[in-house]
Length: 282
Ligand SMILES: Cc1cc2nc3c(=O)[nH]c(=O)nc-3n(C[C@H](O)[C@H](O)[C@H](O)COP(=O)(O)O)c2cc1C
Image 1 (cartoon, protein in one colour):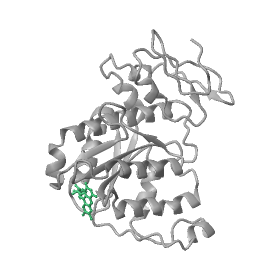
Image 2 (cartoon, helix red, strand yellow):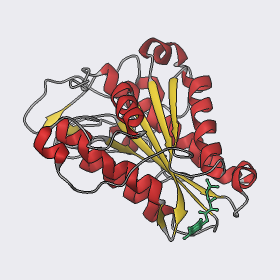
Image 3 (tube, protein in one colour):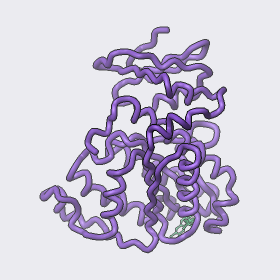
Image 4 (tube, helix red, strand yellow):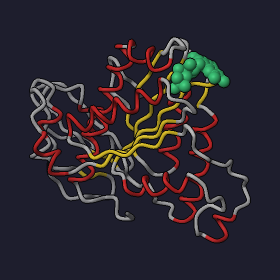
C-alpha cells in the first residue's frame, strides 16, 4: 500500500509499510504495534528512505519466537554500559544484568564503566577542548569512557535518581563528553542508546532522569531508544526501595523493563549495522 513518505507510518490490516523520514530514528517503535510488517526497498529520496531488511524482518514479527541469534551473532554487536552510581548497589546490578542479558540472548560483546571509585573531574568550561580539539584538559578516568564510546555500537547509560534527577556522576560523565564532541561532533553518530534510572521511591524521578539521558543522545547525534509500550516506555525504570542490589533484584517489573529495552536496543543496532554502516566516523 502507499504511504506518505514524510511520516513514520503504521497501518493496521494485512500489511504495514514503514517509511523512514529523514530524522525519524525509530521505525520499529511504530512497527511494534502491527501484526505483519513489510519493510520495502526503495531508493533514498530527499524526504524518505525505505529499507529492505529481509534477514531482519522477522525480528519485528511479535507472533514468532525470537529466531535471529545467527544474524545477531554475525553482526557482532558491541554494547557499552555506564553506571553513574558511586557504589556497588542497584544501578551497578542492573547494568551488569543488562549486559549479561545482551551477551546471552544476542551474543553481544560488552564493556562496562562503573563510576564507583573513578576519578572524574567536573567540566570547568575552560574551552580547551574547543580551542585545541585534542580532547579534555583533564587526564582522568574519562579517557576510558571516550575510548569505549568510540568502540561501541550501542550504549546504555544508567543512573540512580538523586533529587528527582540523574546523579552528579552521571551528569559529569555526560558533560565531559563535550570534549569528545569538540574533537569529533559525530563521536556517537547513529549509535542506539538506552537509559535506565533507579529510584529509592516507586515514582521518585525516574522518568525525568531517563529523559535527561535521552536528551544527551539526541544532542550528540545518537539514536535514543525506549523499551516500547506496555512495560518499558522510555527505558528501564527501577524501584530499589533503597535496598541497593537486593532491591533491584526483587523488582521484577523493573527487570522486565530492562529486558524490553535491551531487546529494542539490540534490534535497532542490528538495523543500523545492516543498513549501510552509518557510523562512518568510527
Ligand atoms: C543524594 C541522594 C538523593 C536521592 N534522591 C532520590 C530521589 O529524588 N528519588 C528517589 O526515588 N530516590 C532518591 N534517592 C535514593 C536512590 O535513588 C536509591 O537508593 C537508588 O537505589 C540508589 O542507587 P544505587 O543503589 O545504585 O546507589 C536518593 C539517594 C541519594 C544518595
